Structure formats: C-alpha cells, structure tokens
Image: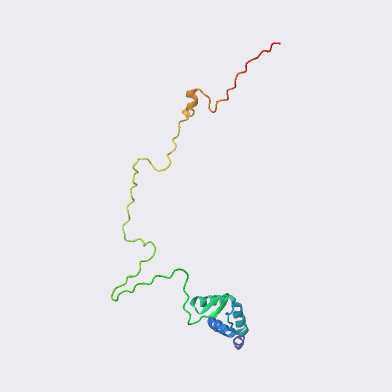
Amino acid sequence: MATEEVNKPQSLPPYPELILKAIEALSEPSGSSKSAISKYIEAIYGELPDSTVLGNELNKMKESGELVFNKNNYMKADPSAPPKRGRGRPPKPKAPVPPGTVVSPPRPRGRPPKDPNAPPKSPKPKPTPGSGRPRGRPKKIPRSPTAAYPAAVSSGRPRGRPPKVKPQLTEVSVES
C-alpha cells in the first residue's frame, strides 16, 4: 500500500490558480499565449492531465473578467479599467420606483398555458361565404360515355384544322 502512495502524482492546485501564476511568472507585456501558459505549467508541475481543460478554464476566466483576451494573448484584468460592455445597444435606464409600491413580477414570455379546469370549447360552425359557392377550384363534372363526342356528330365536320385549299390548275393548250 505504501508503493501506491509513492507512485501517485502530486496533486495540482486549481486551474485558475495555475493560470494566474503562469501569467505572473511569464510577465510578458503583450500577454501570454495559451501555448506559453501550458508549457510553463508543464515545466513546473509536469504533464497536464488534459489539454482541453486548460482552454476551457481560460475561456471561463475570460468570460468572468479575471483575464483579458487580446490578439491571442491572455493578460490579467486591470482592476481600474471599466467593465467591458456586451455587444449591441445598452438597455434603457429604469425609472426609480417610489418606496411603498409593490412591484409585480414581469409577465412570462410566450403563449400562456391552457387551463386544465376550463370546459372544452364547442366546435365552431363553419361560416358560409356570402356568394354561396364553395372555396377553391370547382369539381370536375363527369360526362356520360354516350355523349363523348357531341361536336363531331352534330356538325358533321372532321376535327382539327381544315386542310389548305389548293387552287385548281387550268389546262393551257399550246397550239403550234
């Protein structure tokens, strides 16, 4: 059991602490890159357990304002600098509420939920349009098979374009 304790790697301090120590020790004027921070930590504490954890911790610290990210370098945030504003238009300043007034919570967004105790609604009768005709394209009326070609029977003319009328040729006799 004693051999397990000897072979056990030394425990690392929390990542934010490691990162801040590395940035202070490197003390570069334009900040320290992610690779420089990881090389420093590896040189001091040995092999890092997971390289992606360092990137995640750097992003967390950048979002919380502990670090400033500029041109792929991380620097400690200046305490006298104003807090960085988000993108877009800033919100309007809210008017102060006079003391003694009760502020109701804001309405929730989205459609309100249905009341489970409400009686079911009766289906609406369909309103009839003013013209009396149904909406949309009219239905095709089927024809009876006996009256399939009434135009050909009644007029006696063939279907389609009539043929071109050719002028009659007159015979010319040549007397010699």
